[in-house]
Length: 426
Image 1 (cartoon, rainbow, N blue to C red):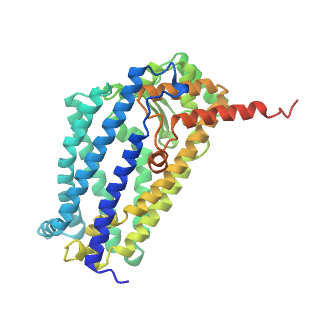
Image 2: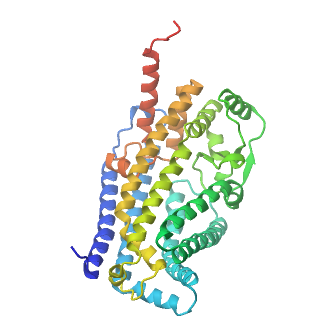
Image 3: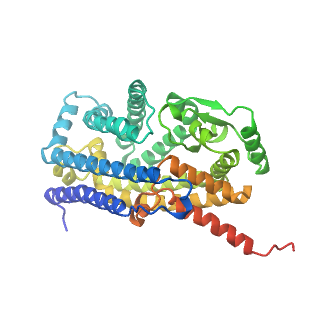
């Protein structure tokens, strides 16, 4: 079957509207899954008022996300039908510059209105929803400064990445997608290396963990695992939010383990070492490397499909653009790629959930303190008002971490299996 521009336009609209409606359905099912019955595992951690707040927080965020998605989808559909892409392309070509500069102007003209539409949603989310539930600690000044830094950083890095891709497609002929794929992946890998020392400090202050009981416990644990610590840092997350977290970032001599100051304030030393052991477990089980390989394969697939679609005149005609171009083709491809991207996202989220189970198992086995890990998971869930009973479809599609009750059950099951396994030395 030959796809005419009219049929392609219908496909595009079906993808956009269908994806939005499906996402709204999944979120609605997730809200319907809520129950006032507190799971037995969290008795003593949640009181009635706090648990009600957690459910209200989920409802507020979910309805906000659904309204936002509906508005953005409506605006994109209206923009397409009104011939907006053709107008932006004409404006970019008006400057009569080279392909790369024209492409950067085209992208900039699209990103400015998106930013302006996004801004009030960000303000509302931060200063209304997060403020209402006691999470926001960001001042207006910090919000504005973060916004300016983010825009500048995204503008520079985005321009470099787009220019790199456009240059390859302009110079490398039929193999352009391969060079663009590997070049962009190399650029992303470079950013991953330098982010802990060059990008993240633009937004937060990182301080080496001071001497004391916690540092001694961490260093002792690291030695027991033959794990060379490049640095354990505290991050001033409390400047922006009361939510707590920990993360492992960087590679080689830029490798860092980061504990939010809010995490340190609310957890015991055994719980903090358990959280740290979980993060080290990701490294020891090579999860970071495996995710890089998955990213490499998925981005390669993306660029290959892009190379097949980017010169098709019917696609440009469907969007009302008279002259085909690589820069416009990338944008149109992004809209058409949505179903494939969702499928890959489901797969990567499934892999991520398995990695979380593995990291939990590593932490519990290496420390032999399952109750400390369980206590840490419970406190994190309560402090961050995590949804304890998400809908299975929501988990399948969107969760990169297993629901906390499943993680706790897996830890306990593993301990039960270990106790029932005969010791080979006896």
